Amino acid sequence: MIAFLIQRLLQGAAVVAAMSLIVFIGVYAIGDPVEILINPDADQATREAVTQMLGLDQPLWVQYWRFVQAALQGDLGTSFVFNIPAGELILERMPATLELAVTATLMAILIGIPLGLIAGLDQERWYAKSILAGSILGFSLPTFWVGLILILTFGVWLNWLPVFGRGETVSVFGIEWSFLTLDGLAHLVLPATNLALFKIALFIRLTRAGVREVLPQDFIRYANAMGIHPARVVSRHVLKNIMIPLVTVIGIEFGSVVAFAVVTESIFNWPGMGKLIIESINRLDRPVIVAYLMVIVVMFVIINVVVDLLYAVLDPRVRLGGSNR
Amino acid sequence: MSDTAFIAPPRRAVRLRALAAFGAAFAESPAALAGALVFVALVLAAVFAPLIAPQNPYDLAKLSILDARLPPGSVAMSGYTHILGTDGLGRDLFSAILYGLRISLMVGALSAFVALIIGTVLGLTAAYVGGRIDSAIMRLVDLQMSFPAILIALILLAILGRGADKTMIALIAVQWAYYARTVRASALVEREREYIEAAQGLRLGHVRILMRHLLPNCIAPLLVVVTVQMAHAITLEATLSFLGVGLPETQPSLGLLIANGYQYMLGGSYWISIYPGVALLIVMVAINLMGDRLRDLFNPALKR
Image 1 (cartoon, rainbow over the protein chains, first blue to last red):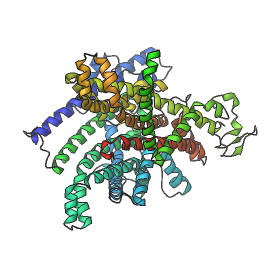
Image 2: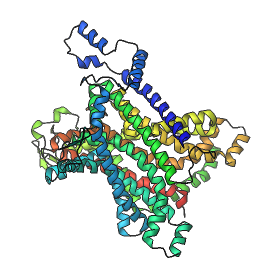
Image 3: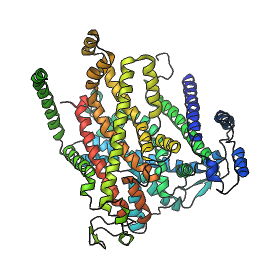
Image 4: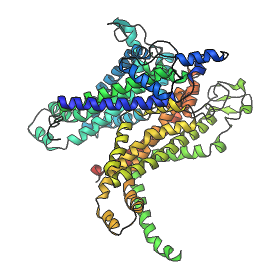
């Protein structure tokens, strides 16, 4: 188990190192941030001073080496635009994104899996068919357009829910959270729904496919023949068997939810990391772009390791790092 | 030529019959048939947009700011009725959507096609050659697929900048791995079959075996991936354009039309954003309905 963990963490570190090189070289090969940062009328001396201050006069490999050294000490560079450490800027925005992503993932699990179960168990009924048809719609609707429709319907026409920002927040351990206040919760509803919709459709389909696969198997027939209550067959025999692929997908999809938060945050003006990265791309704020990508890559590596561990817990047949490999 | 013409008919007839049988099986699902018909209609509308559209939306001389933001069905200064209204510049929305559809479909189809070729070549090579080349290609596939498409596209567009060609590069980069993985999986199975052994025994060239023998037998599962990926590419392009990092303003795809309408939406001019979105939605539903049917047809577990 520990050997497996160490192996996976080493692999993860290799991915992080590779991505840092790709991202750094790619991002630092583009444009000239000095042009954007200083007054176009500035003289050559000022220009050179700024270039030197940002370290942009050094060869690329020197810049990269400096970046790696600093990054290992937790310093991801200073934002050209905000003039505060990029890592700090990202961390400051991260709780908002995580709050949104966790809420959306929970919604997807709590709505998608039960609907998928129904669609799989009563396949021929009209409601099962309409759930399945609905999931095609959920797949087809572009996230950003659904966001606009939600704003238009619930924000403009019905005027039920706020559509702008996080609302009132409460500070717990020095971090601001929206979901602890009523106003904050109201602000969370629409963006989270928007972000969850695609995943709800996905979980419906996965759960349904899993149910269809498990139902014809012998142990289900046996359980039914023994007269076990259908509800118990579903919860103990069906659900437990489809949980394994589902957990993997939920883990991977959580990462994708964080990435897709870029879209939802931009539409609902949610002050998270996603909105920050779009603004930073438009302003060529390289340190923030690199810092965001590094944070995301680390997050993905961690998620993948956690998913692997959960997999072993759920499925006793998987023996991590054992001799049978 | 004359003797090939003599041999060809039976072969062509066999192929035609197979195609007809496939078409009949596909059409057994009314939803899939409807999806296919709508999709063909949309493609035709996009191809012939300059002939159908009542106005050339790029001709700025024809636009009048006095006609701006007319609700659907209003009559313009020129006496023309705008069925879907006009946008913020007084552009006929129906025409703008037709031209936008053209760009969206073109970018989606072109990037899916290039990604298909790159992915197929890499996947076939990986399966046929095996060994170190196989594991190198598959490592790359794994790396690409472990990150969400939108993230990779954002990184690339942050590096490359905005533009139609750059957006397409980003779309190709996020798609090729799916083709490569699918082709490799089916090619690995097919490689072990007798006909490949026979072809190798006849000392046919590797390229010939790959293209004439292995590839045709790996195409069916690819068809499913193509439909799914094309739908993905179209949504992703719309999303990137909406965020302002995809296509330039001069080539307004459906995503950009929606983005442009966003600023007027809170003021009550909802149609500028909504109708391009509905067009996008119809495209997606049509493609997904076809894809669903194809997946069912090619899934051996569901074969009757």
